[in-house]
Image (tube, rainbow, N blue to C red; front, side):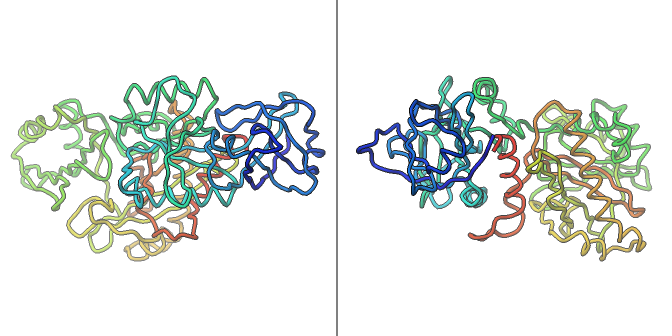
Length: 455
């Protein structure tokens, strides 16, 4: 099967019918495309019987304006094309869609909130690489339909009726939205009806990740001791075993709701809880009183209790690392970036939402009091651990992931520990965006979409 990237132009039907398309004579001969009988044109879930007209001086593809509109094509895109001779199908694409949480039609300069610039960046990447992308929300889903209302960019954001895409990237930001019956039914239906690939199809549960990975001997070495906090016995065991433990909401993100518990020299227990204004401190006389103080929170939040780690730090500000691991154009996990995150002055978590700052791995470890061997091997160890963990998630957890944000820590001996895995890594807390610049993370996302769709 041959592939080619073609500029697409539109014409007003006249001597040619609206279901005729014009292709260059050279390509028609090369692909042995018949011009004396109808073919099938495919674009995502869109199907239309068409007739191919061969033209000597045409290098691209010309489609009638009415046909282009039915396909959801507005500007003059560059698309990839393949021809399947057995089924006589000319396929254009890849058609990619991104499922986002919300839109605001009244703010057309920034209709998708904090990820609006990422959406524009992906549009620009698609135009350069020969792909087509649109964006939609759970509110746009219509049961049983072979099309969907979405947003495309054509000198500004416009609403259009689009075919179901070849690939859907799930960027929903809450479990509540993701678990809506309409969303779950839609994802299941498009996979079975159209062979659509949906990736990052669900959130990860912290406890699920740790319980699954620690059962794998090769990955267990990265796992701090962790349990689902079910009662006093687990709390007592962990607090007696470790001077510091952390309680993390099983379904939390951005450092929200984390509680640090430290055993004091006088036998009391001190808690520090993350909050907008800085950590809130409380002291409890005993384990049972500590458990009583936590039991109210445990009614509404499931917690993972985790061994406290002595992280490397700069001026007593803990440092951890975020690796963005993505599948590439061959469907293989690769590390796109690793950044160090240094906790804010009065915080014990490093999330940017809590006042943390970003740094390169090299710069961050150079500020720490560490043996030179640990500093020199830090990046390589983080890189290897990130790939091992991503592959482990892929192999052991039954869901389709194409990119993961993996939070890692390093202790003073250079040992790497897993803190958390995020299946919806942020698109808006990295480098500033420029109109002409496409970040490596966006390029790799597009490469993986092309791989999945067969383009």
